[in-house]
Image (tube, rainbow, N blue to C red):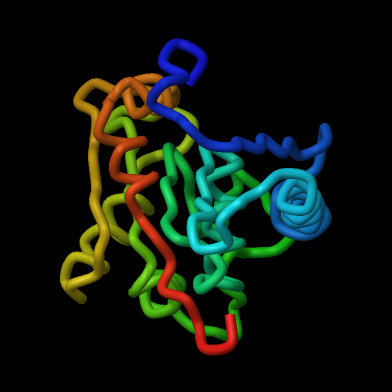
Length: 182
């Protein structure tokens, strides 16, 4: 984004999870409070609020999208995950266990949310299996979802992802459908 600020004509907020805190829970609450504060301070379009996350922030993006998919105009997830695993412990899963199989529940919740998932095929930190499965599931349902897998790509999928001019073009062209009374 710093290399090509002209591609990002937007107010961009980068909430960070505090050390030793995972996105679901308090960090997600902090991110939403930061967004709300930013929207009060700056003139923003509520129908053009985008959710972007990378790595642990990708897990947080899935978490926020699952809980309120209609809030976002679109979402981009880079090297994120949504199924808990021992290497990436989480305070609270993206999909509550009571909601059933994570892939199916997540796909049904974000079915109408335009999203782009990007992941390195050789990521040693967050394996691309979640990204592949959710992309395939959304594709089978006809969702407005895109998937890019970087050949020989490691965990730093955000570098090649944000170098693609089409990513910000696509993201910033999305608009949330206004809800009645909105």
